[in-house]
Image (cartoon, rainbow, N blue to C red; front, side, top):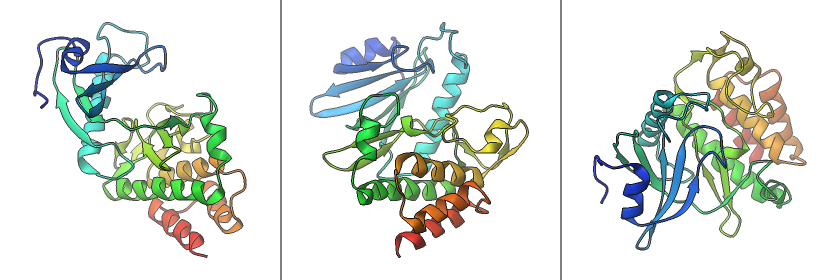
Length: 256
C-alpha cells in the first residue's frame, strides 16, 4: 500500500493517501518533528516525519532529526510488543523518511497535557500496576535486544481508559548498548532522569533503564504497596546491577 519513495512533500502525499485528521507540529511539541494522523478507509495510521528541513529552531537540526527517526525504525524492527504501535512502512522523500505506524487511541499521560495524568493516578492501584507491568515487560524485551533508555517520561505514554491499554511511543532517543553521557544534561524530564544523565562522561547503561522505570512508578503511584515500594527505592538509591535484576525483583514483589 505504501510506496518506498515519493516525489512530493509528506503532507501532499498524505492528503492524497487519505484524510489527515490530526497534525502534531510546533504547536504541540518542540522537537521539530511533524506527525500526522491519517485515515484510509477503515485503517488509521500515525505518520512521523522530520519536519521542515529549513526549520533551525529545534535543538537538533534536520539531519539530526532524520537520524533519530531512522533509529526509531531500527528499534521498531528489533522489538515487537503489544505496547508498541506496529511499524508498517518507511517512505522516503526529499524531506526525510515518513515513518508509518498504527494509530493508537488514548490520552497522553504527561503532567502538563491536561487531566489524564491525575485521572490515571486516581485509578485503582491494581490497574496502575497492570500498566506498569506492561511497561516493564516491554523494557525487558528492549533490554534483551540491547536498547538502553533515553528521554523516557510520562509524555511517552498513552493510556486508553476504556480498554485499559497502555501505548509507549517516541523512543527515538534510545541507544543500543552501554555508552557515555556525551551531552552533560541529557534530554529528558528531571522527574524521571537518573543522576548519570546529568553528568558528562558518566556511563549510561541497563542500570539507567532500571532507575528511570522505577522513577516512572514513583511518579504514577500515589501509594505503592510496601513490597513494591522497597524495590523502587532500591532501584533509585543503592541501585540494581541491571535492568533484568530490577525486573525480577519487581515480579517477585508483585507475586507476594
